Image (cartoon, rainbow, N blue to C red; front, side, top):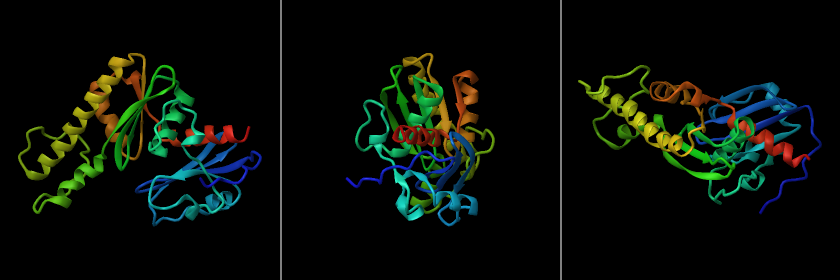
Length: 246
């Protein structure tokens, strides 16, 4: 295993980054405080302030095709070994582990992280803060894209902005109905099982399509049982960095 250099002493300004499948997620920290974050496509360059700070100290990992060191040559690359959640399996995605670790740090256990990104994932920790499993499905955007890619006549549809007709009267409406009510049924199934097992548990929604997921949750689950937090992976990186610097 390739080892990172010895981490520096804790500095005031530092950068966290997760290289995802479709976006690069950056955050600028001052100590433990998150100052600003950016979610950039691979074609977008980080702003100048971020590049200047990243030359000094950068922490993170890559779950996409671009290696972390390609973006931050001096970065400290985190791995599952930096995340002390009992029960993690060796091929668990680093982004899922960091998101769960961040949720445990900020919200406690039991918890379920719903990450609505390129993939739609569920990642659980039980009341003891141990990894309790999860699931991976196509992301909401991928659901709208896949039939256009693999059929001759079906168009790509956008994520519904409102509630579509369940029994649609056109092909685009039918596709949007499938995305909307299909994802709603997925959430009801998985989160219904989570709440049945952990009645006092908390659901955290993150990822680029979190607003759509929250729209669906608002119709089926009490508001105090769930909330959005786009920074879960950054909280996980912050906690992992703090451990390494002790």
